[in-house]
Amino acid sequence: MRSSNVGQVLPASAFSYSVSLRVRHPTLDLSVLTDKLRLEPAHSWTAGEPRRSQTGAPLGGNHRDSYWSAPLPAQMDGPNSMPLELFFSQQVLQLGRHRDFLSKLQSGGGEVSLLVEIAPVANASLTFSSATARKLADLNIEVEFQFVGD
Image (cartoon, rainbow, N blue to C red; front, side, top):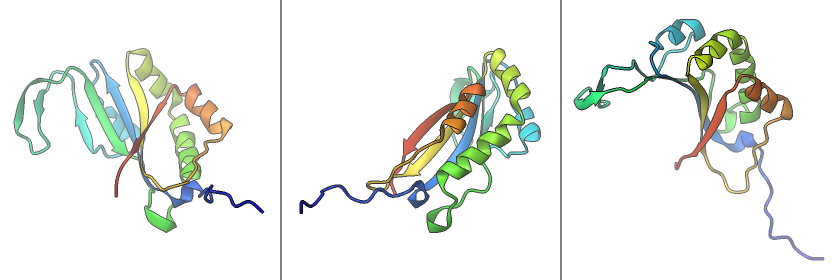
């Protein structure tokens, strides 16, 4: 009998992950997202405001566009985490409740994306259902994956 060099494929529940909603707009003050989505931003600025470092030091120049980014709630790291596929599916449903609002932002030049930060695990797999992919496409939301070290 031949042995296989392929390891066991691990489910996405083996990942440690975090997911953030990110919105850019050429002119709008995006602080309205905080109340509308009931999410507290980790980063936020308005077009025309002076650029500052994370410590608040002036960087020179002004922001060209408005930006707002918030971590999505109910995430957990490690073995007790909700499988990423399930978490993602639930969050897309929540965002779907704000379809008209997000569409209006996008029609005015805004961009909406989800940033998925994953601590990679060898031989792990990640599958989003076609239903989740359709909902993302319907909401015109891009997904960005960033693989981060321990």
